[in-house]
Image 1 (cartoon, one colour):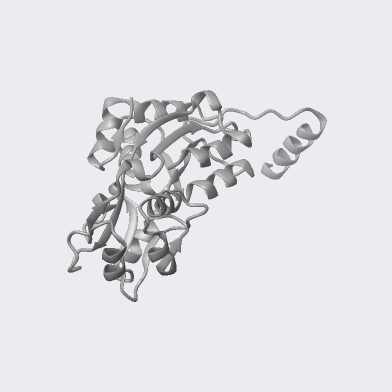
Image 2 (cartoon, helix red, strand yellow; image 1 turned 90 degrees about the vertical axis):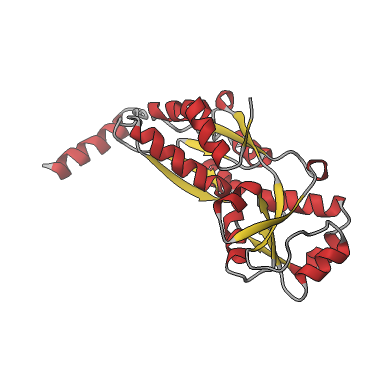
Amino acid sequence: MRPLLRLASIALCVALPCVAWPARADEPIVVFAAASLKSALDAASVAFHAEGGAEIKISYGGSLALARQIVAGAPADMFASADEESMDEAVKGAAVKADSRSDLLGNQLVVVAPKQSATDTLALTPDAFDKAIGAGHLATGEVNTVPVGRYAKEALRNLGLWSVVEPHLAMTDNVRAALAFVARGEAPLGIVYATDAVADPTVKVVATFPEASHAPILYPFALTASSHHEAAAKFLTYLKSPAGRAIFERQGFKVLN
């Protein structure tokens, strides 16, 4: 009987225009989010579900790669980017509801080292970086496509550090992968967000880049154009609520008005 019912539904789609039906209330909300949001969004999704909200399924990665997946038709209800450019890509591809877009969070760009490193404070000078990196590598996101890598390249150039650091770069497809290189001791330094350093006790912050050295680090959130899950908007509202704000602040994010 089930195969016959399935065939009948296919025949209906051929005979009549198919409509996108709303998602069932018990279906999970699918979120595509920047890797740097993992600790905070994992906690927020658990809290939201515990308060009676829908279950949340989150796919983490580099923001631009996620934006391109959504534009290509990957099923998602919400997109949370670590930069404006990646969200702009999703908007240009008509993949998100532009009127739902809002900048929720801010962050800082920092240099981290393994906890056991002899380097406790790193001056933002060529000599200091050259000495601290030595024959090793500096891990960060891919500088042309991953937000943290873009911010890092801009800051390094503005501070006259790019020529020293570039030959030593170990670039990754998301910020948490770069953090892992440092945490495992495979790179003496890494450039990540301040919130990533908070999330991993095996690393320490040895320098913070001046905010003026790079574009503001902003996290725009938006509902996707293809989403029919009514609870997705509720989850976005929850993230903006006092409870959601508290979760982000505990992870070191700056919550924007």
